[in-house]
Length: 198
Image (cartoon, rainbow, N blue to C red):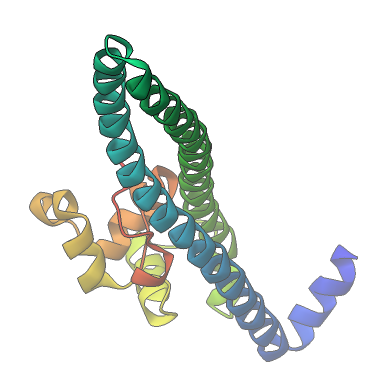
């Protein structure tokens, strides 16, 4: 299979370049869909955490009220049963919210893994993006220019998103090739979940 690919690339570089571009577009679409699902999961988690905090405060209040009710008469015993029932419902809700939070953390880890994988794939596909035979020692600046030209790295956004890179005075695409891809840094907004991964 590899020799067939070599023949196609040797005989028609434009076909190889078109296949590579199509592969990159497909990967971007799949990654965008995963990131959208992760963002939705994170939004649900933020809501769940907020509800969890409210529920925990309510439980403390209910437990205090329950102690007072137990000291009083028969009429208050009925109230105690109601509070116990509400407390049980809230504890179940807390368990559900904790499970949602766990799922969101797994989604965040999955997103970080996906961004690192994108970096690894970009490095692997860099020779094919250029549309010419891979040079073993391709200059770093040429690699960086290819990433920008093929809209894999958004240099302005990258420096804004990663101020430590800007502070170090490094060019965005150069940093991405040397460090960012392996560190799991998002190279452009469509691959960012909205929070720093580091």
